[in-house]
Image (cartoon, rainbow, N blue to C red; front, side):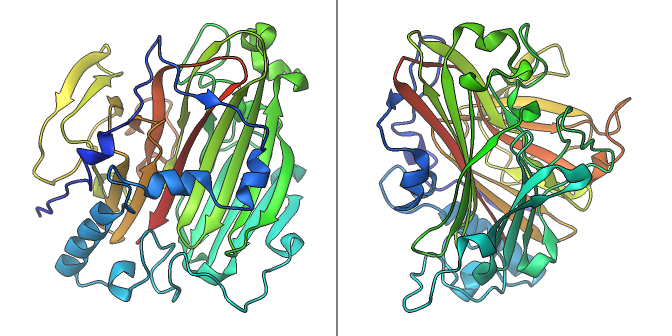
Length: 396
């Protein structure tokens, strides 16, 4: 099979992209408006993710590949049905981004519900009934563990059968947040402290278009042991927002420097995407990107033009790709399902990981592929400034 896949605006999407290096400051001055109050107007991340280099809505790359695959396999896509850009599931019968004129908005307590999950741990459940989507979010680690579409018939994320829910260890699966470091480091455990810190619920809301949202917060003032030595001389506030809408699932992390000195970090959304079998998955959008192979002595390379064949995983894989397009996609050939990912320019990189049966790996390794939008080179934030990184996901 050969499906040509050229990310929409692959040149234009890179115009104006901020490159975050050791001496770069990829931030803007923080306003006094909180993330929560911004949610009431419109999602900042969705606006950024849907905008291509020319200022028009993106998504052409996703629609093109979805249509090509659909024609070959004889299935119908949201684009065929006229559901619009980045719809949340086939057959949901809505128009993406439509204003619900005359339709009463749901009550927050009915659609953004605080409850308990495994072992009594606190959860927030977001229910966007109009598009048949539901999300489960644990406040420990701010870990989103489940996103179902099509009335619950499709689970997008992998959650390990051996995941530990003890409010001590990071939850394995879903979307763990990597911050303030990606990978190992001298001052804290692998991938930083967000995954094993207890976050607080800052806001639950229903937006004017019917989108449902939750904001969790974490700050240096919490003085948690999980921060390790990194936070000893830093002051920060983190806000993590999760939004379900006609556009799909959006997650974003806002980092604000509330101290008197600059600090640096790396970050990623460690997406565990569920697949029928890792051998059946192909990842699109990484053509002509440079990478570091972490399993081969950090050997550097460049992935060439693959003619639209995509990246397949046939061995243990852990690669960090740099300067990637703002649009990526993954197709599961067994389930005939296309996962679409848009990321903000502040997450210019992406990693691809699967242990492929390596010693000590998760027994469910065949059932997931990690595709992680990331800022792999240090980002520096000056005092009173902030950084925002986000992703927008949808399934065809």
